[in-house]
Amino acid sequence: MKNVVKTNRAPEPVGPYNQAIIAGDFVFTAGQIAINPESGELEPADIRKQTERVIKNLEAVLQEAGCELKNVVKTTVFLKDMNDFASMNEVYARYFAQESPARSAVQVSRLPKDVLVEIECVAVTG
Image 1 (cartoon, rainbow, N blue to C red):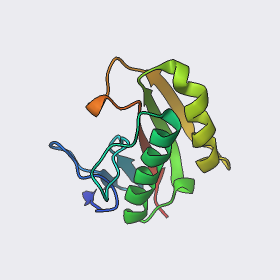
Image 2: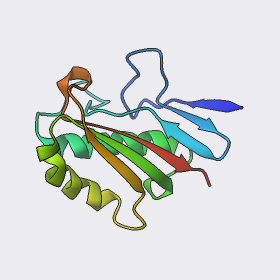
Image 3: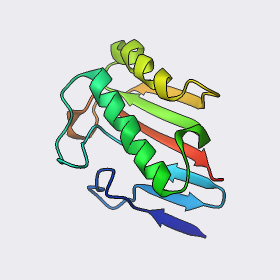
Image 4: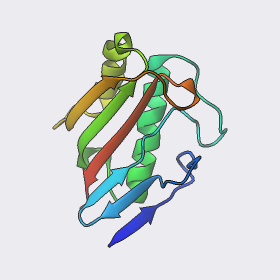
């Protein structure tokens, strides 16, 4: 059985997908980009600011699912430019300092709305 997670504290999906799905003891989030859910606008083209917004969006989705960032066991980071890795990692480390999740980080040729970063995660409930 799976349950759909939906919150207005994170951007609305722009296609046929959900912000997250709870399946068993796991929460699988969709990739989040740097859209401010209150304004609907993208954050400026600055990797630190975009990473901060992406993680806040993920946190909102996880909270709606009954989790916190500390419940995250795996993240996948998609970067427009791997040269932004150190700056992204600086922000990321502030949120995942204790018992950091497993992580993959890859450079991709293009992301939705030409953002600089997108992050998805898997968390455990409870």
